[in-house]
Length: 168
Image 1 (cartoon, rainbow, N blue to C red):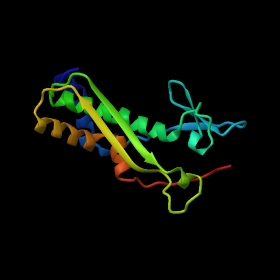
Image 2 (cartoon, rainbow, N blue to C red):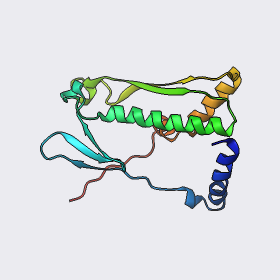
Image 3 (cartoon, rainbow, N blue to C red):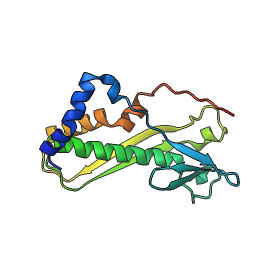
Image 4 (cartoon, rainbow, N blue to C red):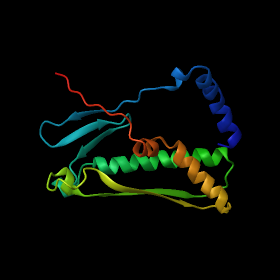
């Protein structure tokens, strides 16, 4: 897809959202079912069933997906798609590219071993390896716009309002 095709595809959406902001607000959903025989959660992805379980550092077998890994994978997916869309819109010359995310967890927090240990990632690093001959200013602009428009990055960066409920 080139910049013209991308802009043509997005133009009616942008105009509709300018005219009626409520049309731009969409509720995304995820659903999972707890397994009654193991400490796992079967997450419906729309394509397949993903089985998440405990990380080996918390006693898991390592056979199931770790939700921390899934968070980093969601960040990589979103940042990669966003970078590609921004590069296309900017007519940025981009050959092959890879995206990597890594994060540091102190499992003492989630296991309740040390109250001062955080539960969750204490640091996440996102890295792009770009095959391009573009000048550094254009690379900087690409990264700035990717960071700005990546939904997962911004969600992690700007903590949304959260709520928890249960029903019977």
